[in-house]
Length: 188
Image (cartoon, rainbow, N blue to C red; front, side):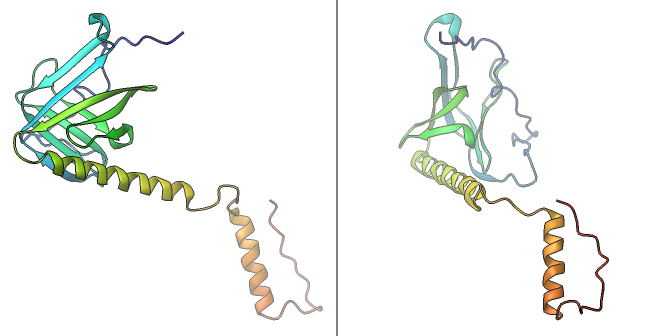
């Protein structure tokens, strides 16, 4: 039986962003940078199956949009009691369409469409930058996961130390037979 999600309860991506008095979101980390922003963006998000008890809509005619290297943030202008902010981590964006929306995961495998339109001619530019940001993030994740063979175990510190000691002995002409090696070998 499929789980029914009640989207009427507080959502983790709505009204959770802290802004400065200049309407700029506080960064998640020291490395978060704003890649793109727009001060006149229209926003629409509908979550649920259409049944009033299981559907919620967030809409704003105009607002601030920020795309960082870690997330996308929207703040309606003016903010309302029910809708002060929206954010999605780039890792939760599953698909970007050519012109006016992207899809994101909201719960388990449930995805929704987020529609964004701009008063000026920034629509194509924004979605191009969003796709590039996602590609860059995905390439970085691939590099991190596939930069070394997972089956190959990294050596323990004591194993590396033993190997260095052996190389030093070999390069210095080995121990003479008269010398006794009293060093204790590290146990693995």
